[in-house]
Length: 148
Image (cartoon, rainbow, N blue to C red):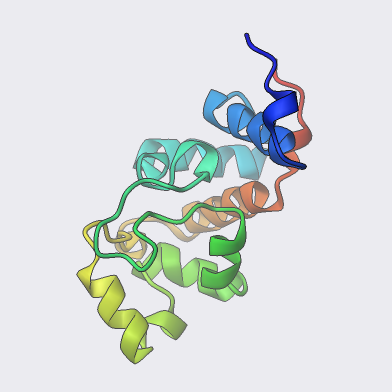
């Protein structure tokens, strides 16, 4: 493996390490509810659109930024202001704030990949578990976990 450190800007090495951990898929929450939510996210295919460990970046023609946002980073912070909005994204496929916005709603309607509305077929406990898992990913504590 070549040594890239001399060619990377400040912070890029840490970002590269975080990315490699994310795509490894080896980090898994230790608490039961987060683990249940992560397992459900894998079963529902969330990471096919939101990327490994929710890293984002999957191409989405017609969307504002051209890709599906991740569960962590600035995109997540812009799209999910609180737990209620996270619940709305999971249950309705869009938050009320953006769904009712005249410009945002048109962009969301025109994008190729749309967030499914899982509220019609998930139990409340499953929605809660997904929320806990997404928040675990958003907090980024998995970045400091040792890879087994």
